[in-house]
Image (cartoon, rainbow, N blue to C red; front, top):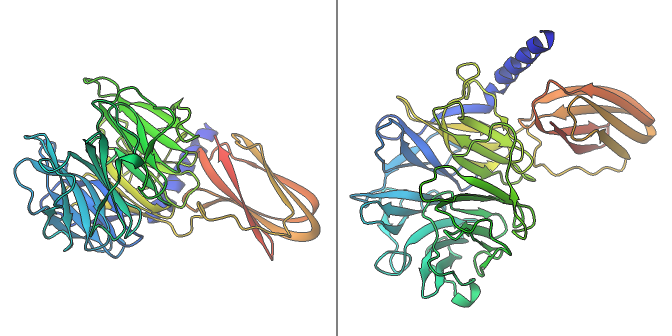
Length: 461
């Protein structure tokens, strides 16, 4: 009973202290009950978002919004130019004025490629490339930075229709067939926000209906399939990656299935493993968190108990719910979350269903040390943390040749210090800490003296 009471108190304190890390921002979408199902981050200040009608009617909406000050103010607009059954599927911002969109016509079963250069006031079809009736069926578009990006569509003339840009999308260059692995008979891509991904440094990927992964590591100049395919067929799919080697994929394996099968690879697709995460794994949206070793954030809007937003520090193998008064307005009950995008472990946005005033949630924690490079030191000769992973008692072992005062801190993913101790070290000194009541996940062990500092990673399971 005492342990349970302590756990309840701990969770309450976490929710109370973390409240300042999440804030609600008004998207200024016209109408009511409009959530956010896509988040496209240009930098820490400029973000584009796509609207989602969350009133339960099943209807779609043509709404977008953007910010240039980190979400303090949002300027909303519509996709002027799109009519009938044409609705946005993939939204990618380039800067505060320019964005691209892949749209889908559910009546004609066609796709189209759109662009705005005036902040979304007007949208027009990008002529000459990736448009049904001209070349192909448009699938996706992504940018690595304000200049370099790629877009792609289904195969034409025995090659996937892929284009690259080096000037922010003002001009597009077709990738020659000799630089793209040949498609199989009947192979095509998918028109959806989670069907392609990119990682800094020119790494990009998409997955096909044949269950194969196409990958570039040179900003789209060349594309090759991974050594093996995770699936033999995919009726719908998702793909996320933190590097050229670490990739997570999902697919429905029959035409009537609504359940995704998940796999992942740590060697660039040479081998694939069954993805069996622990914790609350939310399967609506996921994103790799840039500037982190292997952090992911995932969301779900399902109206069952499987809803919320969680983070993983180990490549999605274990998940921990974010705790916050905005995310759990009722104790023990998560809100419904939609699209997700993070700029870094310190800054990110999560879409949610709007009720009354349409909103998006921002995560901001400048104190977080996750993703910050370790500081090397010559005075802290040796810091050992064991066992690692730990689930009960963890030992901090410091070896210093000089008599020195040290401070040990255990810091969670939000940047909050959950344990701190000062100690004098001469030769080898150890101390222990009971971590059994802490949430599962990755922590930073920070050890400092008057001159230097070193960070170590600790996993609590």
